[in-house]
Amino acid sequence: MKNQSSTVFSLLLGALLVFGPVNGRSEDAPAGPGLSLGQAVATVLERSPLSEAAEAGLAAAEQGRLSARGEFLPKLKTRMDYTLLDEAPMVELPLVLPGSGARGFPAGEDKTLASRTTLEQPVFTGLALLSQYRLADLERQEAEISRRDTLQGLILETHEAYYGVLTAEKVLGVADQAVAQLESHAEVARQFFDNGMIPKNDLLKSLVSLADTRRRRIEAAHGLELAWARLYTLLRMNQDREPLRLTQELAWSLYDKSLEECTTLALSHHPGVLLTRLAVDRADKGVTLARSGYFPKIALVGALDHQQGGFVETEHQLSATVHADWTVWEWGSNHYKVQQSKSRMLMARARHTQEVDTVKLRVRASYLELKEWQESIEVAGTSIEQAEENYRITVEQYRENVTTSTEVLDAQTLQAQAKVNYFTALSNYHIARARLEKAMGILQSPES
Image 1: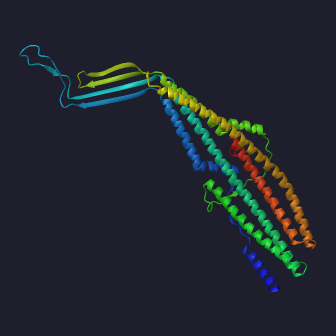
Image 2 (image 1 turned 180 degrees about the vertical axis):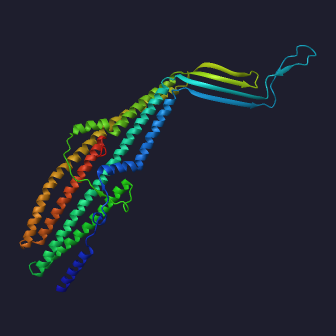
Image 3 (image 1 turned 180 degrees about the horizontal axis):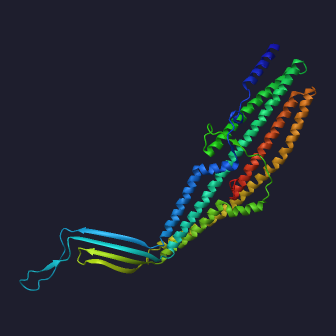
């Protein structure tokens, strides 16, 4: 039995050697340049493909607006026709006198050239051109709102990744402290066992707990590596060649806006609300555009004509024309277009109402989440002091041999968990605050 216990003891000591300290990034990586949260956000916004795509979408919408504006201005057109005939056209005349040989004369040449240059200015289109321009302008506004929404999404992702690294670093620090504390406790337990003051199973509990804590430290180190990888991916930087260190502190302050203020801001700034509101405006302009089919299209046309080789030749002939085009009957086609546009407007209004309700609920949920983590910080901060004092007292009692290893291990676990809870609450508080501002549509870079 003694040999068996000695074998178990040797295996546990071997396990401790195997699960030795695992160096995380914060320990073995060279200290790189400092990176604040604002700098991280600026870098992500500058390098992200989504940001580039949003800018390109806005540029495309602006070009569409300029194109629609050009429809108000006169258009200069030119046309040229060159015709080759198999023979010159002839004009046949009736035979007037017997014996007369002349029965016709050429009506032109076998080659003709005609050109026409026009300058056309729309005068009245039944508000069609104006409606098209306003629709293009609304599309540009939608592109701008979508761009801001994309940028805010990137800012939120950067917050989550940045604070994810900070939290992982704190968790790794807590794991390092836990390993050091349990190593010290295991050494004291070994001395007590050697002096016959505690049974062997008490020592084994300490060694098993130390091995498990070393395993948890490995998980914490790998979690930190993964958190760094996510941040580097957003930054579009090489994790192996560009070492960084984060300079932001996990400090916090009370959020002073009320739920009512947050909801009011959301209804004025949230991209979803603004986009559905613009959709209503677009549907309204669509009705006006459809109604323009009821009216004639009037334009003023100035022309310069040139004809050569035909029956009538003109060198340069100027003309001015008032051109009107009016579809009087089209079997109700335009009527149904108008009704279709009205139905789309009703759909847009319903979606806007639904989006308003959704945003209100989302803001409330984000606000409650923020308050939850705010209260958790206060509770966790108090529990750290209590857990540390409990651990100190328990360790002293163990050294005096008035308590067991189980009590020490429990106290150490409570202390580590209290610190992890505190740092997690701090990080989640900042992320929840960013999510709330994103739900309100006012999330900006910390440097702004």
